[in-house]
Amino acid sequence: MQAIDKIDRMILSILQGDGRITNQDLAARIGLSPTATSERLRRLLKEGYVSGFGARLDPHRLGFGLLVFIEVMLDKTTPDVFDRFAAAVRRAPSVLECHMVAGGFDYLVKTRFEDMAAYRAFLGQVLWNLPGVKETRTYAVMEEIKNDGPLPLL
Image (tube, rainbow, N blue to C red; front, side, top):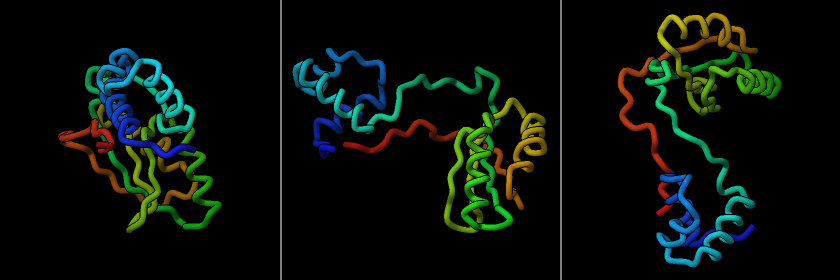
């Protein structure tokens, strides 16, 4: 794997803001030929610097206005319990993100729902039935201040 340089970082930074930019426009913005830009982009994709492309959807317009973070504490902190919990979370479509964390609990889960009743159903029917769950703490978001932060590459 080749180390990335300043131009590669420029490409990645631009792609974070506009994943649909044409190669021609990208080349113009970084000051390289379209061929050189295309070769660099192809290498960055092949080496896994870009994990995917997609559209950012407006959850409020789509009826998912309630953002909830949940602290999850497991009954045991053993590798098999961690593995079973992680495998089950990966299969739960309502879970947008799940992170194992250090500190006073084991996982931080991010979810979105239509309303509190939908979250309550998820809590009772999904979350509490995940392997090893001992305790949860819920944090409903009152206002999203920043939710689209790109990586600070430049």
